Image 1: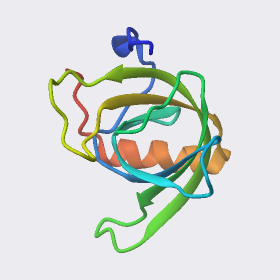
Image 2 (image 1 turned 90 degrees about the horizontal axis):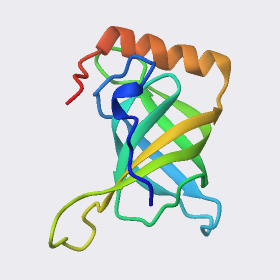
Image 3 (image 1 turned 45 degrees about the horizontal axis):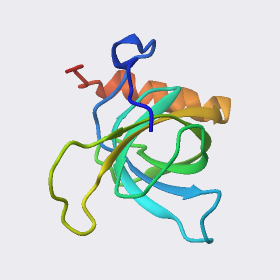
Length: 131
């Protein structure tokens, strides 16, 4: 596993709003796993998982982004992504089902209009502060 050493070198504005995602590893059965984003930009996102995921692995994502202010309508945004980095969560004991890894994803195939929707959402809802 490679730690994220470029955390401060991000070039894009990010939102700390949590968005629901499904993800499917190429090696998986047809089942998808679900997660909540920790942050997102127009070029990638970060989420936590209990699954073993490897750097450079290609993952199909489906991002669910609110379309309106009251969150009664959601957009489904399909994205092919690549694992840019993985960081083990430092903790001595984990409960069953508890997240063990932070995973940074880079979008490698995304519809141009969908990327614009993500960026617009970030601009409207930006609350992310870097640690």
